[in-house]
Each structure stands twice: as C-alpha cells, then as structure tokens.
Length: 318
Image 1 (cartoon, helix red, strand yellow):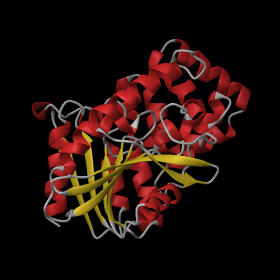
Image 2: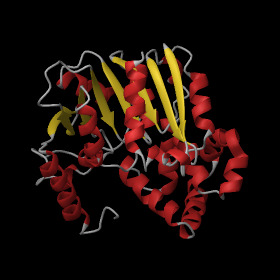
Image 3: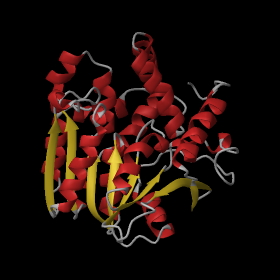
Image 4: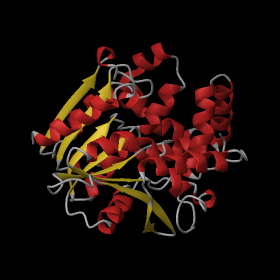
C-alpha cells in the first residue's frame, strides 16, 4: 500500500496488534533523536539458566519486525535473549504518525540513514547490553556491517541475505535477469554515472522503466517513503550511501554471511565480495542455502527454521 492509501494505517494497526496479542509482547520505545525506535524483548520465561547470548535483530527495506516473532520466539526458547527493533526508515519508527493505537507515545517519523551504528548503540544502551550477536535481514545484511564497524559491542555479526551494495541491487532489479547476471561486478561502477546524469533525465528514465515493472514501481515509491526523498533520482542517489565497501574492513568480530542460491533480489557475487572485504574480522563463515533445503530464496524464505538453526550452530561453535 502506498503511503497515502487510507487503508494503510488501519491495516497496519490490525496486523501489528494481532501479533502483539498472539505473542503477549508490547513494544518498548527506545528514545532516539526526535523520535523513538520500537523494540521488543523476547526471553524464555521458564529458563533455569542465564541466556547464552543476546541477539539484537533488525530488518531492512520494507519489513515489519513483528513478522519475525515466530522464529525469534523459538530462538529465545533455545537459551538466547532476543531484542528485536525497528530503526529509522522501518516500521513504527517510520510510521510514527500512524502509531497512536499500537505504540506508547508519539513522535516524529524517522527516515532511513546509513549511520546504523547510532540506532544500534541506542538500543544496546537502553537494554544494558554489554556484548551482542547482531543479526540483520535483507538490507539489514548491509546495515549490520555499518553498525558493527562503529559499535565494539557487536562481537558476532550475521547478515542474511548478504547485501553489500544497495544501489547495485536496485539497478539489477531494473535489468532483464540475463543481462543483470552478465553485468556482474560492473554494476558497482554505476554511482559516478548516476551522479553525473541530470536529475530530470534520470527521473524520466526511471519513471518510464517503472511503468513496465510492478516491482520497480513499488520499489520506487517505497524507497522515497523510506528515505524521505522526493523523486526517483534522489532516492537512487541516496541508496549509494548504503554500500558497505568503506566500512567492511573495520568490522572486527566473528561474521556469518548467508545467501540463497536463487535470491530474487541480491546478486550472488555480493557474498564473495563482502567476504573479501572483511579483512579485520576475527573469522568469516559463508553459507549458501539451496532449493533442496527449501531455503534458496531471499532471506531463506521457505525454511526460516533452518536459517535460525544455522546461526545458533555457528554461534555455539565459536
């Protein structure tokens, strides 16, 4: 639903409140700049031992964190403290003007930013977390690297799916699949070209492309909404800031990179490139999920249980 759709606010409220009731969870607003970050803490109420670790989990470009409750509740049952939150440009932080009935308090909506260490640090401080396993989903797979590069409490870092260059993902979505695969790493050199192209020309080209592609059309208006930009060209240029090329060499923790072998959005070479750039990481582990595992799609949709078990096994083996 586009932001101006009158059905969006009541539909979102119904979705969020239903999941909150189902899992008996209420959001805890974490103050951040002029707004708040909705956060949920999931723990095993019947546990007899302290949690083995703390997971701090967040999404990406268009997810609501409440979508993850099912799998995260299972993770909590396996001895983890789980803090799931929405940062700037996500869910309740973005839709603050629609949240009066679902989130305590009311404040300004926060649009997405590349400096992800700041919201992560605010959440760690609020919940008094001394060290954590950071888990980023979809675009969060890139945001998690930007956070870990500036937050020393991120001892373990998980990206699923790996997304090291948001601009490349957006452009590859607008190309035919065979051409996108053939272009490969050359797509990473588009930033200078986009910067030099006149805004009017870029807007016209993007709008024309969107007319023939529902996915491109959705991504265009959703991107402007999430980033607070006002034209397709402005959004595309803003997306260039989410590359991890400049921050990956500063990540020092243990890293797990995951991808689906048939990811619908993220070019597969991004995981290889990300692994190569993590030169200061304590360790780097990669995992590609296949169709035979029902996990070949973006973010392992189809077998999120396997995704969670993979992270748990990796963490326990460190």
